[in-house]
Image (cartoon, rainbow, N blue to C red; front, top):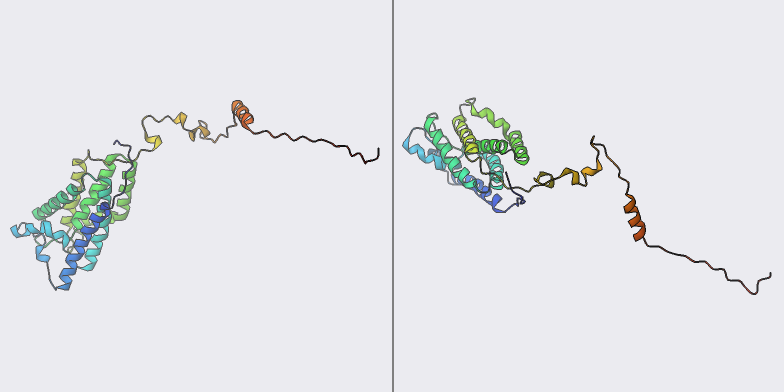
Length: 251
């Protein structure tokens, strides 16, 4: 990884994720408001009509709880995607969604698979493994945060609940891992601290000069030259006293 520019935050990095999540909530509101059921637009494996679910399925949710559980990680992960990988976010989102849906369609159980959880798993896997493979401490730290927040999701890669599309989760996870390998050369440009630069010399670091080889703090006394210069530059005040004899005073 190379680069010396600081990574500024731009408003669109939050606007786009908010728009995606808003679209999910808008679809659910329309279903509730107009008493519609759009589940038929989900992924129906091995059926030609089920291919439309690859595009529409991530925006359809069966309940408010289902929608909320996908909205929060979707917002967090897409924001991180747009921030850290600003040159490839749309490729990751669009291709990742299509491939996750296509893989789910190819081998999942014959049922309607709806919801954005497959995309969430794709983002979790991509951000985690991409952070590890980048060998950059900030991205590794973010990867650990992802695992801490969403580590429990990994249990649902397996068929532990018949009502949950573990096939969609597994498809998204596999696609995310593959993307982390395919886009291995796409790294983020971040600010390099002084101690990260190639020309950094620790012996010239004023902070490190305050410690000895064993790491003990050293209180350096000012040099003789510095003392002389300080004494030379210091202002000098001369106070003269004089005694004036009073003529009226007795001898």
